[in-house]
Length: 181
Image 1: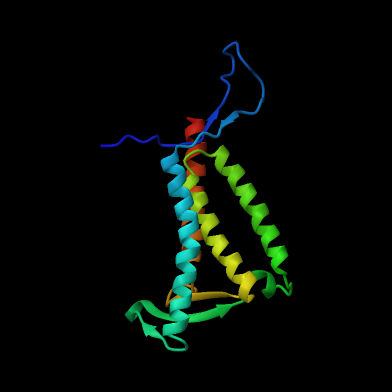
Image 2: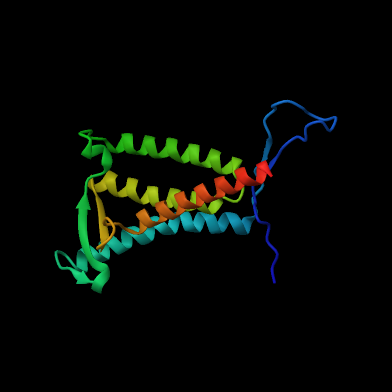
């Protein structure tokens, strides 16, 4: 059985009252990441947009306007929707989209550095959002293909973003509870 560290990024915080640093000095961040973990995160980050875009291209080619029933769950069909900026009347340019994505990615990486164990969440969020920014830059719209009866239409990138966000919330709550105890 292999042993793995539970987290590759670690925050080293001073112990108050130990004769060392005191006060509200920021913790030092150790950015050492094992090659195995980094490869996994990069693979997830890159595979999500590749798989999502490949599925969309395949479904557009094979399905066109047809619908495939998923039984009582819903259907599989290609639907295009404008991004939320466009729904609000804004017409973002590709440059605006990429600047927003880069700013969000930077903030997300900073948060990940402060919340060890959340790297997989960041990989999912970055991969899903990268897929959306690529598609929106190229087509001006996002294609969804899973239409459940009880949920809005979505795609692989949406699922990655949702799971990554839920993971960050759970990890953040866990970190807060651990620091209080």
